[in-house]
Length: 288
Image (tube, rainbow, N blue to C red; front, side):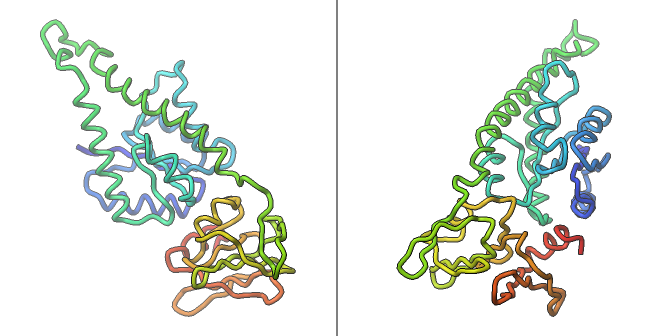
């Protein structure tokens, strides 16, 4: 069985990378690409793919809005399987793993893409198994149209309805619970605006947070705990030991063997390494 796939992402490099990985699988056909949510809706209606690889964050109509439009009961377009693509694992894990076919984190990994395709195959087989055999019995010579498709589509409707409800519940935690972060500086506890933070680092279990004017310590035990308090639109984990504010990056410094360092806007102009796993994301972020 050939899987007909549609890719929707506002980043051309991400689309090309995913298409390259999908084309390496023999039984997958990429039928089209779209660069925004409006195109996604039209391409799904036109091509009726088996699976849509849908970016979450796109200008205008984002992945959530696309999904809601597909669930409009007044539209008769068959609903495809949905695989979400995102650069922010913080809410991907929480929201998508439950009811979507799967989610993929950027930059894409070939092994992970193949695992996702296997899940899609399983879902398609499950939908086919839900089609009543009676649709092929005598008296239904023409297939009885909707009688065979209905139960399978109802299953997908129910799953996507549940997913939309879950996404709506999860969108609130995506935003930080507080605009300020508490830092220990000497014997004082200071409230620091997140936007003033340049970067945070961890060494021997201690998290240091640096702004343009001060340097203190967070009571969080891990960088993951700190990220739960920070705005995911601003902060990016560029290395296992570093989180940076993307608006406080002063310079991208080419390093040896096609690697990079980030020179920050703090007083020391600290240079922070970018892990190889995050290099592609860096190139996409700044069009390098």
